[in-house]
Image (cartoon, helix red, strand yellow):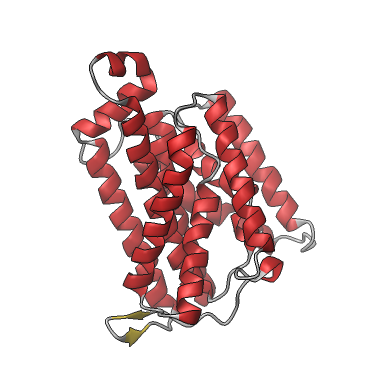
Amino acid sequence: MDYAIYIGTLIAIYTTLAISLNLLVGYTGLISVAQAGIYGIGAYVTALLAIHFTHDLLLTMAISAVAGLLISLLVALPSLRLRNEYFLIATIGFQSILFALFMNLEITGGPNGLYDIPHPTLFGITIRSSGAKFACAVALALVCYLAALRVVGSPFGRLLRAVREDQTAVASLGRSVFRIKVSVFVFSAVFAAAAGTIYVFSLTAIDPVAFTLDESIFIITLVIVGGTGSLNGSVLAAALLILLPETFKFLPIPDAVAPQLRQVFYGLLLVLFTRYRRQGLIGEYKDVLK
């Protein structure tokens, strides 16, 4: 049962990460490879707060979200003036810088990470059970989904699609394309950092391996497989791409080979979907309540 709850918690966390990134990739046309780095910022801020100051769930999540916001502005302000592959390269550089900091700073524990992180508290009650932590992960994913749904169904959501299709046309109408991009980038980062809080409290440990460039590519894979511009697709892809590789554990495969096999599986899915089904599992405009 604990194993099933752990998998469910991972699905909820990656649902939050995929939905928040889909606003960038699917709705705005901005391909960012820095989502895992911002996710890591939220996780490390939470871990350090829990060890040294407070492990109140809502407070640490709020502070982590603010940290994600500030870091995202540090990236967004210079890089969002770039277009297409130049923006992509800038986010790859930012992701590499963050991972190097996680690996080498003494405060982050270096490659060994941080362990024995206290369990979170909510309204003065300590949350120890994996079931309660799963509920927190689901609650965050639901808030992220509803907030993203509200955004994409609003006039601002139509602006995001317009920026994706023709930035020059949006600018000609007197709209600031740069401000629109910064706003959605910050929105995405806030939820990615909040997901980091749930991740840390779920495992009560953290190390840099969880925030590599491969992790960012995996989150992009979730968006592409589920469907760019489809929030429901992100939810479905998170569930499928977390559950399916778990079946490798029940096959007669050496433990040393299984992680590499997962990477091959994810890469193959990415190639197949970009080649044969670009709309993903669920195409755009299939979300409910639109």
